[in-house]
Image 1 (cartoon, rainbow, N blue to C red):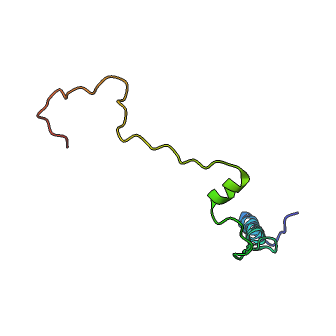
Image 2: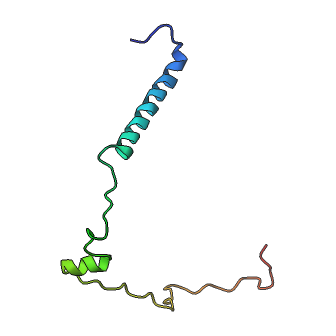
Image 3: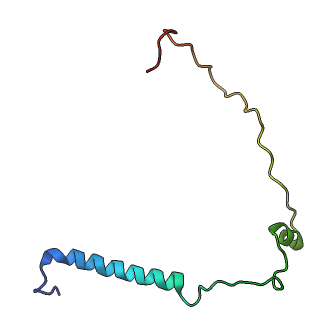
Length: 91
């Protein structure tokens, strides 16, 4: 039931404010809640210092990506035509 002492034009503003406040509270709980604390490990707890080291320990092979060719291949299709008026300058 809508309260009669509040002007009906302010009702969407009140609803939007309540939704925004609830969203902010939700963000604060999710981002800064008790379960979202960073796990900092010291050097005695770290077993592998790099991704390659941990991948090698798991039995994976680390291969570098293939190099991109220096010269691009010719694009298929017709070649561009010469302009109809070669002396005309582009503006």
